[in-house]
Length: 91
Image (cartoon, rainbow, N blue to C red; front, side):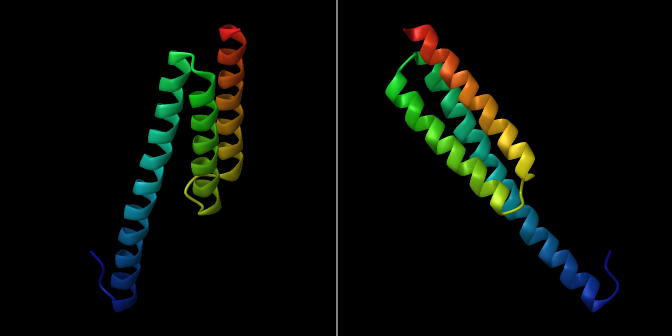
């Protein structure tokens, strides 16, 4: 437990940041999950929109420092690859 005033403040700040980060991570997971669901339906228009939304949420999370920028780039790349594979298989 925090003993000094400054340590108590740091603890409060850490709790706020953690709550914010958990929320952002959950949003990223939901966006990725919805993209993967649309890829299984083989609807090109919906999957394109879902890819755009997932890319945007991942980039936002990276800009806020919730996930590392290279991790974000890697995730976006893998999702785009999967979307392109699904699009090619649909043709």
